[in-house]
Length: 255
Image (cartoon, rainbow, N blue to C red; front, side, top):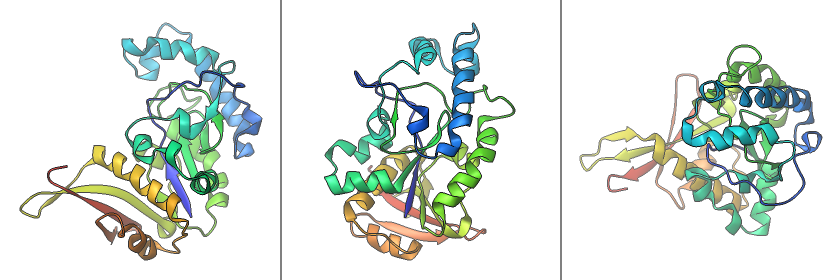
């Protein structure tokens, strides 16, 4: 089983600890690409038009300045650095030791800066989204695609992929359709009609990741995954025209 998570815009900067070691991050094949993009981010963050290129507002000026010092700042496990709706629901701090060990093995987090990292990889807080205009050539998603494809295809092998990423990060590595289950949320109205809700999807993706890590089980296919998650959530399984499984968490109208 491979659980693909997005990063989060909000992050908590570790208070102490050694700085990031690019060579120690998972997927060492990406080290050269990470070094190149980190140098580019440092350069862009020192420019007068940095906020425009990074697509952030004036309130985030301090985070842009912090980008210039990422090699020196303390680093911490990615699951502790990333915060926000999905990671709040996942609540990594309260996982059992076995579930935390499983997270280090089965969870891969997409990143505009690092490409892809393990949940236990040590990183500093940074400010860079997949939509930022700093790629050496083209968009960040397109730039990373060539780097990530051989690495993640090897990592995924024949495993079931539970894809909780958002669109930009999916574009950076389109997961193999026949191995993949996309997780989404649908709000059900009193009349029975449903509407896909993106914000609630982050929350439920976090809850589903937590359920999978605590279960200790490795579902072999989409149907087994749906059966496992149905113990705690109301879910429905469907497939799109490519054959990709889509697992919808049904959210009541009052949520």
